[in-house]
Image (cartoon, rainbow, N blue to C red; front, side, top):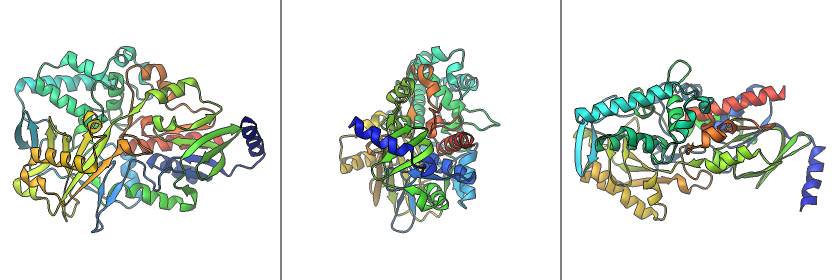
Length: 474
């Protein structure tokens, strides 16, 4: 077997590369890298494991030509790259529905309250003061974190040695404060607070920004002036689909999961289940956990391997209940909901812009997602409806369809929306996250300096990796 590999490498060493760059992954990160590489006049090939482009950006098409997003969905201010890409592809946005009252199901009681830009429900003065102090403290710490190297902060070791839960335990006195803050962590990272390090959370907050703003928790969680402000007409998968059309189908190879990357005499050979392509440079546009499943010859540095072994995907699912019309609007509700029980703890109105039908979307996250791993589709559907009835009443009990996307069980994602860093990872192995290894460059939303975990971050990471490759090819 070893002799056969050496023979193949010897033959490959004398062959002309098929392309300048092989890009592994046809999500927004890989496609964005290809866009810039093509603009620089360099040749490329994209190898995508799935039978479609988009990665964790996925539309579910309905019978009437409408679509619902089963993956990444919202866009908002300071997400300049994704908004610019949408504009360049002729796509338009519309505001996430927010007219009317929000809902909170807490301690068995349903409360409704007017929509507020701050996303904080009516609580006691003591709780509000505690929440404001916590938010201000986290924002202040995050403002001093350099997203390019958070491990260089003077307090990096202290913050990276504790979980988010440990930090919250030291600051929270009221159960209502804990309910809201834990809801924030699970909805933003799809983890429980005891999973990510505090340093990781602070870097994540710092990255909710662009070149002229600083990141805040509010920008992560808010609808108005936040990450959930708008949606894309026709669904977000139109972004990768239209971008792929521009790049040309001949350059994109679907159903091609990559198994091996081999370097011999300055040339890389990338082997998938269907194709073997040689190139001068390689971009691995995948989450670190999935990138770690590829075999590399020669081996990557031990630090890079340790990073991919330790980073885990968040646990997430999406459920979208479809109704003939958005009946809740007649009741003065916007179905922005919070709950302290059930499979779904956060909801939004997913009705299309033309209101041709009604849709309520709920996230299933962290432990709640893991609890459903062994359940069948009918059982998960029942849990979803139970959660929606608790938040919005009996009328939620009869959807015409329930779309369920379980990203944890999707072969080439195994979770989402982002891989997170547990305690100790950033300070010990963080420098390996973006560092190229020879001609192998790493992209993926996790590597972005701004809006990691979002579509904007995926695009940014692809552009950064493409810039590295273009310089290397000169």
